[in-house]
Image (tube, rainbow, N blue to C red; front, side, top):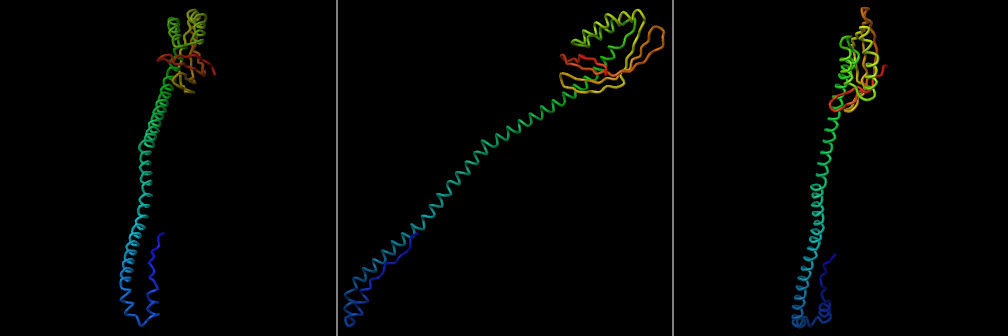
Length: 235
């Protein structure tokens, strides 16, 4: 830090006055020009010192401005990061979240639809498979076969062709099924499992009706826009 220093006055003049007091007037007259020069030098030194002081005082101000400039630039950089980096990232996350929730909502809705449709199909198809009359047994059961798929369709076709249809015609057997209850075990848009409670009333010839109750685990597969039974397993 600059220190202000004043020029020291020469001690020779007072000492000369003290040593030769009788020549005070003469010394004063003689030294007058030197005094003017000293005063001029003093003024010059003062001016130089003032200039130095002004320059010294100005330097911290310039340094302060220089230190503030990087801070301003840093703030501008952050604003650009927020504008071009953070905000697009947030928008992307929000879009992804919206897409996920929409997909989840659609998935839940599709599962609910599959559950409702599969339960209703299991009930209707079970009734069609187990209900017939002697005069229309072949037509009824072959129509029911179209509600099935896979190996179970083949097994059911063999059963009704070899046993049920001939027996119903010969012995005048009729059967009527009803579903008091059914519940979904699992369901998705492609496959569903339904637990079906079945009551079946059978009449052979002129004998009294016979009632039987059973529980069946029905597996269904989606084929196009239709639910078809692929498994029919008594529990």
